[in-house]
Amino acid sequence: MSQQERRPVRLVWRGPGGENYERLLSQGETRIGRANDNDICLFSDTKASRHHAIVVVQGAAVYVRDLTSLNGTFLNDARLSNDPMALRDRDLLVVGSTQFRIRLPITGQLDRDLDVAALSALDDNDDELDAPMALAGDGGGLDLGPSAQARIYHSGRITVIELGGVIEVASALPLQAAFEEIVAGKPGGILLDLTRTTSIDSAGLGAFVRLTRQCQLLNVSLCLAGVRPAVRSVLAVTRTGSLFWMADTIEAGLKVLKETRQ
Image 1: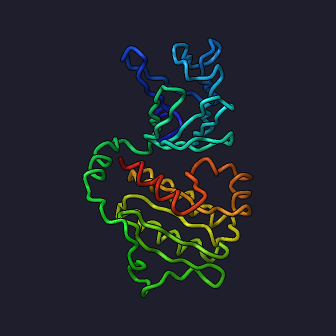
Image 2: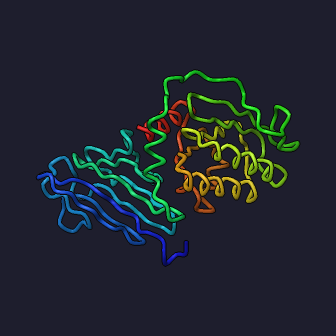
Image 3: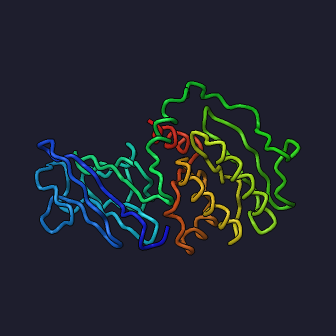
């Protein structure tokens, strides 16, 4: 799908009288708050600050930032800091007492609503960690070369990929192949545990970016957990951090992924 054919980012919400609203977001900033100079004015929402939050569309990335509001901005029930946070399709954004649903454009022509309905109908009662997962043809382990390590296991229907060491050229190709196989299985979500990942180069980052695209195509939620400062700096310099959900801990990442399926 070309840039011209890409569907716009949408914010949908319900007004105080029960009326439905939809806003198409163009590239750049969309400001939300109670004051009249906002792009989306919530003048009757007494819990919203005058200038409450800002949503930014930058290329294919979309993120939100709280503007030091009094009552806070919440993303999927988690209160945001003043740092930008990446948005994904169907995220729930709460400003004051107003609930916004994020609808992001997708690559391809098929709507993913059927996939979401199918995933939500699956049983997710098993939250125990299973044994490490063996990928086809890997002999029970994922060989990423001498500088990187990987362990794959499950938490319920969420696949956890624990990566360690340096993610570089030597590890990018086998990692990309593993990503493709995991996404093709349509898990309930993918958590990349980067707690032990010390650094990442452009090839490794490319594998991560391709993973996000694959996840978007099949409506598989993706989250990075335990991202170290060195890796965060690479994401910041390359401006790719907004492509991912990020959580401080594995537990927080699992919670985010499970909430997105509800």
